[in-house]
Image 1 (spheres, rainbow, N blue to C red):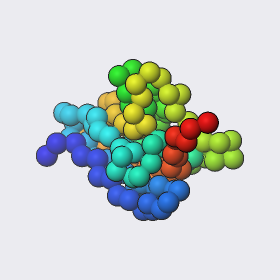
Image 2 (tube, rainbow, N blue to C red):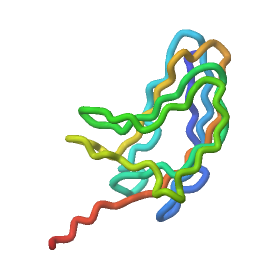
Image 3 (cartoon, one colour):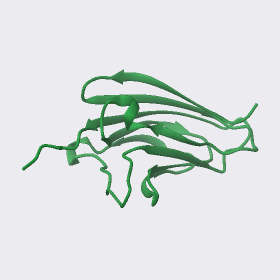
Length: 132
């Protein structure tokens, strides 16, 4: 069985998006999957307000998607989260050229039977398209 990342929506409201991700490794393949595809959630982009949970002895990188990806956050091996950036405006997209607003996740060093269970708290954002 290949490595898996199961994503479950815990809350998909007009402003908030909370996703639970369960990862299990097969020792052969890494995870390289979208975490948030903004078009599926009725917004143009998201900001990351917090992460809760833990992961085994591997690393999980989050990146802002686009032709030139921009790093979002890296969870290190044996890291126990909670991370909370909500009081500081969250982690926002730097909007490099051609950005999509999507967030991708990638494992590094995901071994056989290694697991993670994480909850990601996002705030949905819409780009103001009204003429000035």
